[in-house]
Image (tube, rainbow, N blue to C red; front, side, top):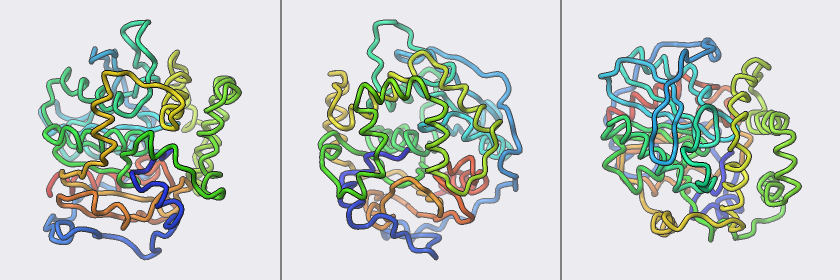
Length: 350
């Protein structure tokens, strides 16, 4: 789910949570956002859940991983890399990928470390879930595929990864679609307390901070994930087959370790790797993102989130924000694939 939303996360959640205007749809924020002349994108209509499978997956060595990924569209098309979150997987983009492929994009959807067919190349590599490590994985993945620059799109962990790449390696990110806005954070901000009502919304982080929480997640991984789906997307009526397609990706030998380390690291309860210290120091300054960006938010997202106006100034390039209506929850690409795909096409034209 969305965690450590940004440097003002604590302020956002304490003073501005759940204040997205009910009629909000379109452009907010900087002058650059208001001056965008991009034409509305045209994307084919699709019924969410129309597709069931990506077909055969591919594997490639990249950095410390052998990464499993799905690919669709022409190999020479402009690349789009779509990044999933927790507790989700590549199937969040099962309908987005063919929509973008049909418009000529080369669409690539990798499994994050600890999910699906992605594996560590060495047994002694730390099972590290810190955000900068996930971003470095994506850069290494792009290098392995010889992709110099791509449009990045993501939600939850994937949106944070896209944010980090856009902030630290803007030369690799042509444009970005980010669900829930600006998600760069730090261990310092993660240590700051919230009012009790807001702390309650982050219950799973504190559960994971305990050994009982680790054991519970390991024992009840699927039950836990389904509960998060229900809380985060209360109006999404997903069926069991849809859930099981994603839940299969949790049967990864490193899944529990990556998830637990990710949340403990954010609370300052687990150490990262020294090789990422410089990146984390730069991220702790909450850098402005300069690449063209569209942020999206579902109107029925059950995860804690800030008001879009509170992070608009973190995007200094062409920028717009959209509230996606219709009972859309946290897993926005899977619940509203046409809206997500349309945002990708449009931001690519900024």
